[in-house]
Length: 60
Image (cartoon, rainbow, N blue to C red; front, side):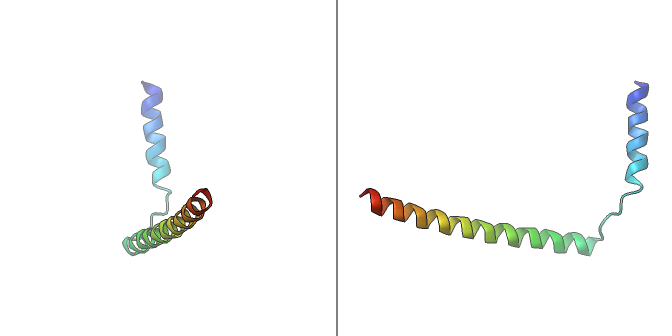
């Protein structure tokens, strides 16, 4: 039990050294991640559709 309590103290101490982002940075980074995720989904969806269409054309 002592080890667990020491672990919690060490964790709390380490978290005090963390440089947390501002609220504005968090919002901007979240929006950026959403935009990149959406763009990647569109790109991969387009590739999937293209390759599926070509494969269906070849098979039929």
